Image (cartoon, rainbow, N blue to C red; front, side):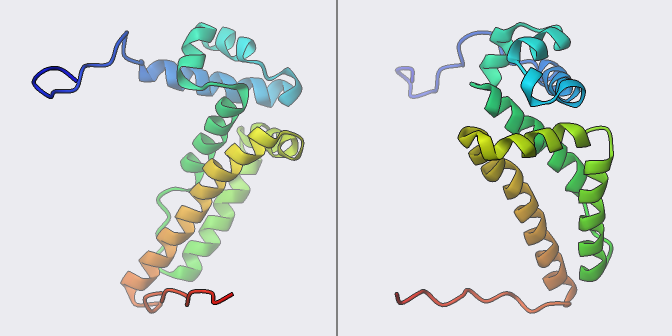
Length: 162
C-alpha cells in the first residue's frame, strides 16, 4: 500500500488473455495427440509459441495446467442449460457431458481422468475444479426448477448429532 492507503499496481507486465487461450488450446492439442505421458510444459509452451515462464506465471505445475484444461472443457460444454423443465435440463446436462467426451476435447479429458488415480495433485485439482463445475451446474438447474415452481425450495438438512 502507498502512504495514501491506495493499493500498489501489480508489478511487471499484465498477463495477456490471448496467451492464456493459446496455452490452453496447445495443452488440449498435446493431450489429444500424445496423452499424459508426453504432456510437458515445454511441449505446451512450444506449441503455443510462448515461453515456459509465461506458462508458469499462470499455472505453477503441469497438474495445475491440466486442471485448467479440464475446467475449461467442462465450463465450455456444460454452461447455459435451460430447457424450461428440470427433466429437460437434466437430460441436456447428461447429453452435454456425453458430447464433451465425444468431441475434439474428449481424448484430452479422458487422458486426465485416466491419470488422476496415479497422481494425487492432479486428482485433487480435478476434484476441486472440474467436479465443482458439474456440482455448480446441478445447483443452477435446481435453482431454475425452484424459480419455475417445479420444486420447493430445498430445506437445509438437520445438523448431525453424532
